[in-house]
Length: 394
Ligand SMILES: *Cc1c(COP(=O)(O)O)cnc(C)c1O
Image (cartoon, rainbow, N blue to C red; front, side, top):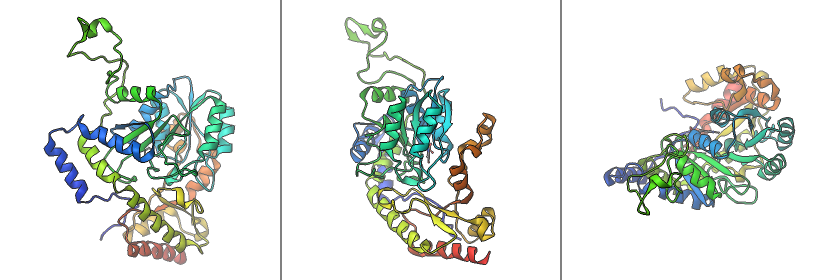
């Protein structure tokens, strides 16, 4: 049986060709494709600088370092996200703080955020997550951030190709210091594994370039040890300096070659996802038990996920049973996400998901249905009738 998963990549001959050409070129990493991909992304989203890294989690980690969070401060993020958004705070020794979501958008609630910032005056960074691709209310969030003296790192892992309400693209950093993306196969475009940080701040950009590669000086960075760096006034040909502790978070040229040809298809990917979302919305319009989220805000999202709330208790079927039955019929659904503070590791740190009632209420009913470029209308109709049938029978 051909399984229909909740998300998957679309790879065409141009992608394969680009990767093969890269392999033949001899430059597998640190070659020209990395900069070419960075320029393509920055032109697409309308930002000054982009730094490609090995994955979206590395992008968040480096962004947290570059934001100078510091170990005595707090980082505010959403409880409904992938663990990496909050882990970025822990990686730099900061304290993660969760602020509840809005029950309709499942994005950070701006009024809730103001309250959270008042309660946590040590908050130095806010990481809003554009859930399922719908951009957060960045005007309100950035006003709250300015008030609290915090900087913003947007986790846009779901939102490459999404637009803010003024029409500008997510990633342009009009309301943030940095934005991070992921190119995991389920995301808008893929490089296998991959990530990107965008910024308009030149100092942050240059630091990110160093941080991506062990904290070693790059380009025209000034040497810290001038005596060791120069002979007779000229830079020593062998010389480089590690200026701070960092990691190897580099991405390969092979991945970036794929990223470039993927990006060329992004508008087509988003347009198709939008059509499929409209078909789902129409199919569920009369349903009492299935309620899609983010309705009425469809034109700004890149539609990473099609997430619905299902009233499983009213339907008299557990979500586990529901998902198992779907899988038996060839449909793989998923839940995005169990609130991060509910994970055992976070519970051990003292977090409790009950403190985020909107996140908890959403989590209890959440289900992500198949949504990807190659999903056919016939497959989609199968998903819809399976859902209706399961809810009718129970
Ligand atoms: C996918 C994802 C990440 C991490 O990206 P990777 O490339 O898998 O490391 C971070 N945040 C969110 C919201 C994600 O969905």
